[in-house]
Length: 213
Ligand SMILES: NC(=O)c1ccc[n+]([C@@H]2O[C@H](COP(=O)([O-])OP(=O)(O)OC[C@H]3O[C@@H](n4cnc5c(N)ncnc54)[C@H](OP(=O)(O)O)[C@@H]3O)[C@@H](O)[C@H]2O)c1
Image (cartoon, rainbow, N blue to C red; front, side):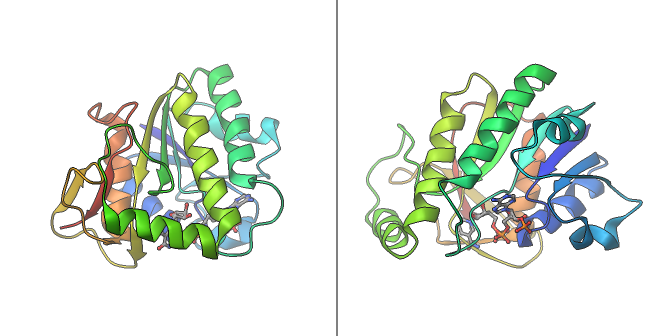
């Protein structure tokens, strides 16, 4: 399959590129700075643009079967009003026009799924994050709400703290407060789960939490 990938230049994005290529997919990668992907030239197609540029987004999506987005607010330095949510709004508009239906987006416990129960540690962590990085928290939540309201075949993959590391061992998937989920996830395991969602219908229109076992 052909995947349009957003957020490829981040720490997780690089794992997603390697995992997608390993699984035999081809990649059209969107970035605002192609220099960050210099080392991958020849292995992936690169489209340069910002998240407001619908023509460039359409070029990236052309011929793609699915979109994976590892876009997320850059730590504490969020510029402007919910930039990732506004970017996803443009990506969704282009997906509808291009008839690409599958969208897989990284998210967090900032978004509550109706199937969640009450998990004290998860709520406490979300509250702490909302206090330390309010703009990032609001952007992640608004992005997830926008996607969940769309009529696309979406999956929101909700994650805890990330660490660099390979896809190794078992991961747990489920709903906060209902499933025992740890507080750590390797970027390799996250990348593998994201790419596997391309042809797995189990979590369509769902927001599973995932974590290293
Ligand atoms: N790190 C953690 O422990 C953790 C925990 C929970 C959730 N998350 C979420 O998991 C995802 C991946 O994490 P990560 O550590 O790989 O993140 P990261 O290294 O910060 O990567 C974020 C990506 O989003 C892009 N991006 C951010 N704001 C943008 C904007 N306004 N316009 C265009 N592109 C933009 C960045 O592009 P540039 O390279 O051009 O800046 C980069 O490719 C993010 O959504 C993050 O919010 C991370």
